[in-house]
Amino acid sequence: MINKKFSSKWINILKYDYPELYETIIDLDKCVFTGKSLDPKTQKLIAIGIVASNYNSESIERQMRKGIKEFSLTKDELMDVLRVVLLTSGMPTFTKSITILNELF
Image (cartoon, rainbow, N blue to C red; front, side, top):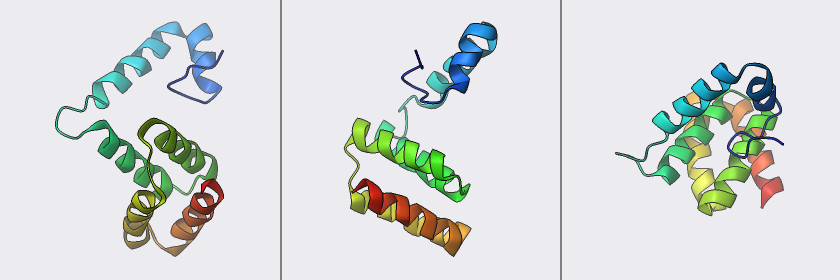
């Protein structure tokens, strides 16, 4: 079974083959996504922007899907994030992200 927090197969490899590393990553995730100063929804939007700027289609889609499911992110909210990606990371990254966004809505 894949860890629900991380929807990639690699996390299960760590869970069963390298449990100490798995626990470290789980603890780091809890430490990072605290919602102390920024609410969890804002943190997710930041994460989506970072992933989108890295130009990885699979990660972009996964993060957007999770944001839509967990925080009811709207197309307009995601588009606001992608506007920042356009400014900071350029047109190719932006257009790839827009294509994914439109497939999800």
